[in-house]
Image 1 (cartoon, rainbow, N blue to C red):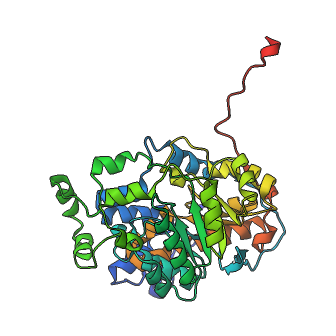
Image 2 (cartoon, rainbow, N blue to C red):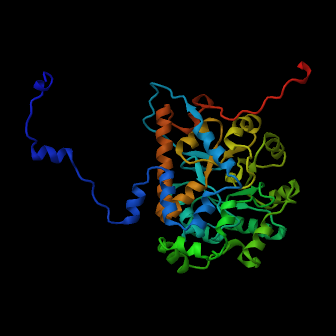
Image 3 (cartoon, rainbow, N blue to C red):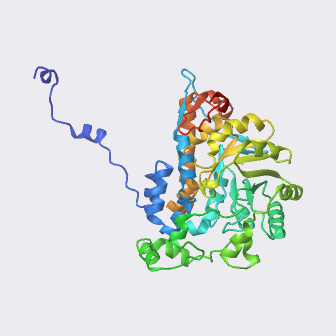
Length: 422
């Protein structure tokens, strides 16, 4: 009671209430309202799941078999500890970086994704144009649903990269390489972790195909998502744009795209054909990284294909320090798989990666809101990168060092007993 006597009570004045209680302006545009409410890429994922049929969403969200590789890769980024510097002002944070002979406004680019227009009808055009406006690279997949030339038209002055599968009919791949070079793509991403297709259980259970195979379950799932079907049915036919001239069913094209006979000889031939920067994507051990240096590659992407190929594959983020130590002076080391925040990107850079790629995060944004959703994804990651760097006391990418991060160890290799000691 005595304490209450120290506070003088009075009726609130209307003018003071208005200063303390300002109502948020209502946004009549539903898409803008949804995207403004997304504060993380996981928020974009939740919106995407509501707005996309299960088969298309699960193709993006899922991984191979028990999806252990994907979970471990994401967990690896959570199992880190940052070490900020105090009294090191970082008032102005510069996120630009030099990568593969050019500039990127941020230390990440958009990874190659297949079937992209199935997720949302704007597809690669949304991704390429958003990347171009943001000043970051965009990567087109061999299994993309927009042609090489149309991606160039969508991103005429930005950096376009092309991801290549070496197909059973080698000349198809060679022609794609020539088309990408003619269109001004500056980097070729030779993917080596898909000798055969991974077994993606969600896709099998959903009857995933292009075009979608309708069933009672498909129809029931689509009823609350009429906007997706309207877009799908009123836009150009969904097809593998770069491969449409090869003919055949989707299954035949996939079978042709994945070839277990690819070898270092194929890499040598592609290196001779391709005039720009050559990157090998899908490296999963140190010895392969070392061997690639002798074959004239400009860069290496540590990746387990987003966990979509070999389940229980190595975690790229765990491999990063060892690969950087062995070949970081000889090639540009990049990393993907599991990246869902700007903090993940900063952690990768601190451990020596020169660049990162985001795939699912990009597609979550695309499914959540088309081009505007991709813009929002980029905004979220940029904000997280800038804030994390400022909190670490780092003003630019070059100042990030291994001392800024510790990888906490959840999974340890089993130590074999010393036989001689027995």
